[in-house]
Length: 348
Image (cartoon, rainbow, N blue to C red; front, side, top):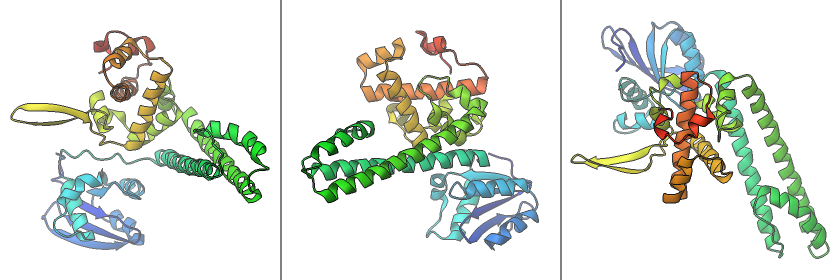
């Protein structure tokens, strides 16, 4: 547990316009409940002695975390799921602020690192790209369904659809209603524009990656490309916050859940408690390694005796642990060691 006896603890429930504070004085133990307008927040902390300021890691929290840290305070961002059990009775802003102040003193709750502006820029680009990908999938799936109603069957997959739809429309133009042909071509233009937007976002991520040594180091690992490397650095921050590679992997939700009683412990499936987006990228990287048969004898052995999805999760776990080792130990990635037969010698 952090030593906070010499400073006040301030739980802050942030909002768009009105902020609720729960202040516990270090000197007297006196409790204050304060409401602040957004414009008054920085002035309040500028005139407040150094304190531990806790917030839920929600929208706007990283911005306020940076601003308040610049004023000399210690900032702790807490996962919202970990704060919820401390809310007593009905939910109000005042009780949320109280719960945050209590949760901030719990040593077992791992805080969320305050992201830098560069990290937020990187993750914003990722979220924009993810949204565009969803929109593109919706557009292509709808297009495939519309034409199926008129007896035109198109292949599954974005690239296959784009290659096939032009010749197919040319062949079926006389049979299909003119309004449908025109509307399909207009929708194809929208899909093309979305693809161009996605390419521009990826170009910006590439430019960010080229100026970051850690991102470049991660991309030397098989299964970790531009998206995974940039997202991992932007979301994780300081890798040395994790004492071991297993802690990092557990934080990502790639280690087994456990349940037990009476001294008996059962291993279940992976916990999936970490960041879903980053975990998904690592899973895709693991699938890519298996698909192009660039894996080691260890993976081949697993594939021969365990289900495919289990092997993918195990390999994603190994990718995460390798990434932690490369960045914390400052060593260059060693392909022969990573793919070696002696798995006991892999990074711990």
